Length: 94
Image (cartoon, rainbow, N blue to C red):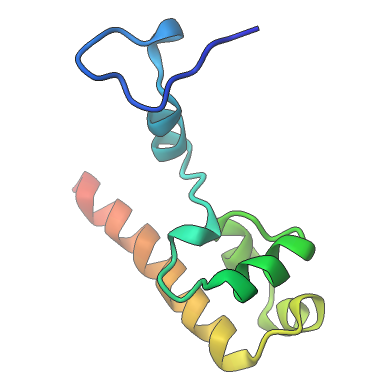
C-alpha cells in the first residue's frame, strides 16, 4: 500500500510525488476542471465513462453526443475549454 498526499507543504512526500504532481505530470485533469462542466453535464459524462479532459478530446463529437445526450453546443464548449487547457500547458513549458 502506498500513501499519497495532495500537496507536499514544505515536507517530503512519500515516494517523491504528490497526487497533485502526478495529475499535472501525466495531464490527468478531470472534466470538472472545465468551467462549463456543471453537475448535470458531469453526471452525463460520468455515465458515459468520460472522466478526464483528454477523454473529451479523444472522441468524435457525434459519438459524444450519442453517449452523453448532451447538446452539441455544450460539447463544443467543453472541447474548446479542454483544448485551451492543454494549449496553456504547452505554452507554460516554453
